[in-house]
Length: 283
Ligand code: NDP
Image (cartoon, rainbow, N blue to C red; front, top):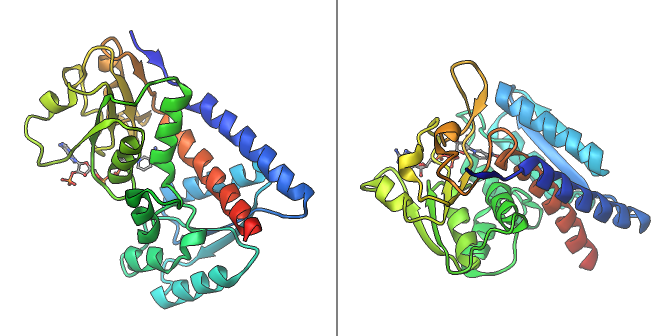
């Protein structure tokens, strides 16, 4: 039977630490500020943006809201980013994805000052992670590392398998595990005999975007299973990429959905905002 990795509790702990750090800066007259840009009214994006703004308020971080119309031109958005890049009191710039089809996400991410890229998506920050330089780490994989470390799950020398190779989850996840001295395998849609690969894993991170795809046949007994996926099941309840009930007796530790990786993503975003303000101070 697996022990449950409580993402909600660990995220609360991190948020308390961030709140204390924000308070210390406030004592020195410095406020931490995050600019949140949303284009259009995608319902899922509205929920994410609302949560981010609410968490900012809870931790004493000032959030500046830019709610732009769906038909906003790419040029207009680029101009706003340029303005926020130049604004000395803005520590973080977050553009909620996905963007409407007529705007290039690549162009927009590349326009954000890497020193304010608290999502960690800018190619400069991706390069910094790959080469071992300091930069901003993408919030979801960074949150997974925190979950594992704070749950006392060893990574050094362990077999870790990441299913998924997206730029925002799978690839940086693998880089971060490598940085922890794990032996890392990345699996993807072309991987042959996926279950044979995942059954090697002491730590299995699943970011595949396929509802409840990972069943007990994919799990080495006793493995730690981290489920990044986020879906709705047939009764509209949140569920992950892992079939939690099926895997529960085989895994040694597991993250639930909800209450696993999800809360960590937002906690690490807040952490990155604080970190950005600290770096601004040191300049
Ligand atoms: P993407 O769709 O960008 O990537 C999915 C990856 O899974 C791809 O690399 C793809 O391979 C691989 N894949 C797809 N099908 C298979 C298969 N049958 N076997 C093996 N590999 C497969 O997704 P994201 O990385 O953006 O997100 C993954 C999941 O995590 C989603 O459910 C998303 O909602 C969730 N998510 C949750 C977050 C949170 O805060 N909890 C944050 C971000 C994402 P290939 O490259 O070959 O196509």
